[in-house]
Amino acid sequence: MDISDVQFHELIDRAFDSLPKTHRDRVKNVAIVTADEPTEQQRVELALHCNQTLLGLYEGVPLPMRQGREPTMPDVITLFKQPLLSQSYDQASLYENIRHTLWHEVAHYFGLNHAQIHKLEH
Figure 1: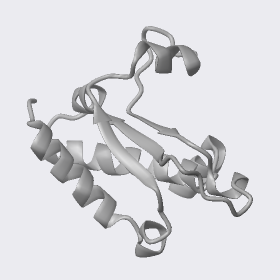
Figure 2: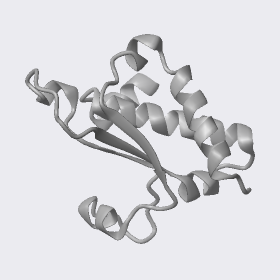
Figure 3: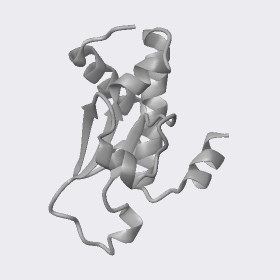
Figure 4: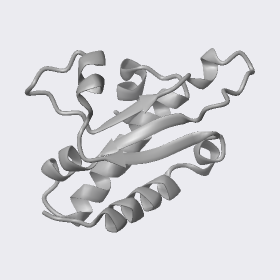
């Protein structure tokens, strides 16, 4: 499947808009960006093996750890286009994969760990 960067960003916008309003309204000073693939530095920092896929990444200081301070630089959520495309068989499944990945990374922004996210999803 092939999709333009503009279409990919439109799916991300739609996915963000589909998140619960109470969560969307609390996301502040966060840049949502895209990249084709994780960088080598990101792969090293996360100790990813060559056969591991990364769909998204939250980089920043989770809300509960900020102690009431707002960082000057925005936190960053990166969605990786090629891995998301490789996990999708059509535009509908791509949208669902984007939505799920975006929710997962937003949950990290709110301070949830993988076990807590998994529990909420099931």
